[in-house]
Each structure stands twice: as C-alpha cells, then as structure tokens.
Amino acid sequence: MPNPYLHGNFAPVHDERSDDHELPVTGVIPPDLNGRLLRNGPNPAVAPVDEDDYHWFSGDGMIHSISLADGKATGYRNRWVRTRALAAKLETAAPKGPSEPLDGPANTHVIRHGGTTLALVESGFPHAVSPDLSRARVHDFDGGLASPMTAHPKVDPATGELIFFGSDVFGPPFLRYHVVDADGRLVRTEDIDIPRATMIHDFGVTSTRAVFLDLPVVFDLQLASQGRTLPYRWLPEAGARVGVMPRSGGNADLHWIGIDPVYAFHVLNCYDDADAVVLDVIRYDRAFDTGPGEAITSVVPALARWTVNLATNRVSEQQLDDTAVEFPRIDPAVAGLPHRYGYCTRVGDRADQPAQHGLVKYDLHRDESTRYEPGDARASGEPVFVRAADGSGEDEGWVLTIVYDATRDASDLVILDATSFAGPPVATVHLPARVPFGFHGSWVPTDS
Ligand SMILES: [Fe+2]
Image (cartoon, rainbow, N blue to C red; front, top):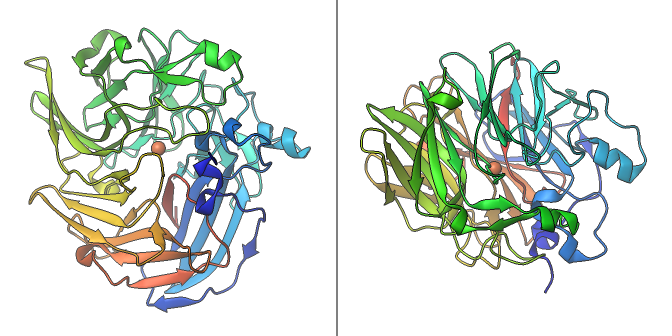
C-alpha cells in the first residue's frame, strides 16, 4: 500500500523559491496584518527508496513564509531548515552551533521569541533561522539545554516567558521542564521523574501551573535498533497519567493522577479553575498502533475537556464534539487563561486515509461550532489566529490558513474574519508554489 504521507499534497516540493514581489490577491487583505506567516512541515529532501521507511514525522523540515504589508501580499519564500542531518544528505555546509543529542530534522513548528526565530522539533534542539530563512544555527540557550525541546512551548501573555519541556529518550531523566524569559535567556530547568520514555508532544500551562501528559506511546529500543524512523508503540499496560506542578515548583511538587489509557498529541489550552485545572485536548483512543508506512493511528481524534481535580484526585472527561479535528489553536492572548473559542482543522473520518478538510471554530461557552468550508477539492491546514489591531473581544481578529487546491495543484493563503467564520474569506492570496500539508506555524509581526 502506498505511504499516504508521500502522495497528493503530502508529497514534498523540490524547489526553494524567493518570490519577493506582489502576489495576486482576491479580496482585501486587512491593512493591520503587517508581518509574516511562517509555517513548518516535513518535506523530505531525498525520496526514501522504500516508502515504508518514511514517517510523516521524520521528513526534513521546510519553512514557508508569506509576507503581508499595508494590505498587500509582498512575497513568498520557502527554505529547508538546514540541520546537520540535512547537510549530510545534501553534502552541504553543516549549521554552526553546539552538537545535538541526535541529528535529525527540525520540521514541526516555527516561533519567534526574544528576537530569535526558532524551528522546533521534539527530538532535537531548536534551530535559530536567519531572517531570510536560508541559514540555521543550532540553539541550546547558551548551553542551558541538556536534552531536546518540545515543538509546543507556551508563551505566558502576561510575562512573555517561554515555558516548555523536553523529552529525552536516553534519560533518565526522561523529562525536563524549562523556563526562558522574555529576552530569550533560559532561567530555569527542573528534572522530572517519569518511569519510562514516552512520546510527549504537547503540555498545558496555566497562569500558575504546568500540566504534563505521560501517556502510553512508549519509546521502544528494539524498534530503534531495527532502524525504524519513529520507534514508538502503543503500550496501554504502561498506564496513563496527568501531572500538575506549580510553575515555580519542581519534581517533588508534582501531583500525578492516573487516567484511562488514551493519547493526545495536542492541547488546545489549559487554565486554572480553583482546585482544578481545565485542559482541552485533541483526544485519541490510542496511537502508534499501526504498522510501518501506515497512518499514525487507527482511530480519529476529537476535542475533549479534561478537568483535573486536585482535591479529589480525579480527572473527568467530557467529549466536546464528535467531529474529527486536529491542529487546535487559540488567540495567544488567552493562553493559560479561560478561553471561549478554539480553532481546529477537520481531518476526515477515515484514520487510514489522512486528509485535511475545512476549519472548525468552537464556541465553548455556547457549545456551538461554525465551519469554514474551503470548497470542493480544497483542504485547509492549521488555523493561526491573529488579534485585529482594534480587536478587543477574544475572536475579534483574523484566522490565517494555507489551503491546498487539488484542482490547480496549487496553494493559497486564506484570511478569514473570525467573527464571521463561515466565510467568505476576506482575502485569498494565490501563492506561487504548492505548500505541502505540514504541521505548525506562527504569525510574526514585522516589529517583533
Ligand atoms: Fe504538534
């Protein structure tokens, strides 16, 4: 069976382009959108000989950048993230900077913090990329990082701190907690005890607490020794736990609570509610229960709310919707605070045929959702919310998403008004190159 992640719009592009001129637009780009949408994703530079050897999570990272200024789309460019692993494959100059524990891709997210643009992957160190994306430098926060950094750090909107964890499959410790200040200095590292190396893709941060997910997708040394690119497997007997820690605390302060074995790659948001922590996740019954070259799980995910009650030592679950969704995002201004809205990508109802459709906006106060349908043969990526310059309400802003049009084999940047989410878009920027389905990205204002 062909590997689904090497075909259609999952297939890589082969050119690095620099189209720094005005791009065609349908509609009107909001003039307050001055900056760049950066989006990272896997784009294998060398085609695998055996398709079963390729895993979506293991492709070389490529960042796509779309610039907007004063109501115009002023350019598009794409560049591979030049990691040591990619340089070895292409026999080009390796990036500068410290050694990583393991050379691999940097393909999962791209953020800007403390004046530095960082390409992230959970299996390695960040790579600081140059403004034109053409150079990368391994970034370990001046020697502060001893193990990889998650691709899902959180920014506290009040303090500007970047709060994150790192998984180290070669531990113990298998888990570390870190805080970087608003200027980009690593100021805190705590070793966290967990019994084994598990895949921890995301976590929760409230205004006072950090919440860790120790779920039973387990690193398997035997699979690693067989050369499998992603040596993890579903092992429900390992148990599943949620751990809550004061942000200023350490391992001794962790409060672990057992839950039924499930998996979550992503957390929409997390906030304090007195003695409880509310954590909205994209929940899977299981994951990594499939074979080489197959889709990542045999089940489809949906939005669920976990209420972690520290007084009763229980986690209760409420399924919030039954629509298959992924790539959850919020307004960054409510990160760690009670949120009303969430934005996700619809991912299709068949786990064995990974697909992306339109977007869903959740109103969690009214228990309602609104869909953006991009049209026949069109498929949306992750929704990135940007608060409007004059926006005061949580959904007063724009949702940016890259849409693939199978009819034209081309991609567009679609800009939606989040308050009239069902569309039509306020603007569609027609990109000069196809953008393969990828993972995560950020809006980077010009003045940041
Ligand atoms: Fe992710």
